[in-house]
Image 1 (tube, one colour):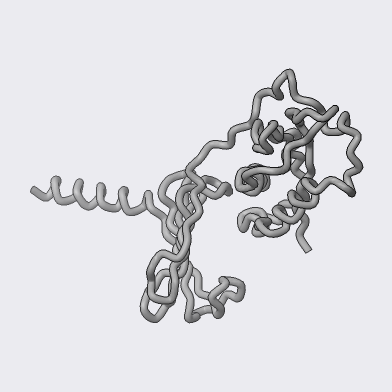
Image 2 (cartoon, helix red, strand yellow; image 1 turned 45 degrees about the horizontal axis):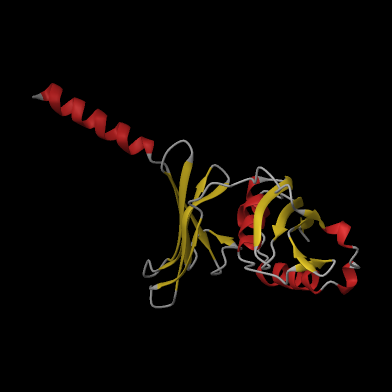
Length: 212
């Protein structure tokens, strides 16, 4: 009986030790100013050797503000933000695998072959405005001082649909992921024409991430 009890205690300690937990306190709801004991609390749990969960709450009533998970340093799983009543306000899904395009269709025309001045191309203006509007510097990249330029390549078909998105030049997986998120949310552009006919075009565009 004693042996069973000892074994049970040892097993319980082993299980507990596998889930490491760390708690930090902050003065502000943005988690910027640490404190010995503040109104906001961040609990970081190590689920396994690769995955950690981060739960940011109000210390007084344990009301969640947001929850996030990381696979190593990469955003992972479902990130959730809560409103003042504790209800889900928004979510961001990182449960996907980056899909690097493998080819550009043979009948696609290189953008430069159209001979359109960049300054007068309404699509370029629309893309730039879209990037500015939806640009979000990944938190994990900010925390680790990661900067860089990601060059994306994509096609615009005869209906203005964007497809065949790929990374030509990557910087970091968190930055690459954000570029996919931005460009995938750009649904369509104006189709291009050559010799009076709509054509399939491919072009490249750099997106720069720079910390101030």
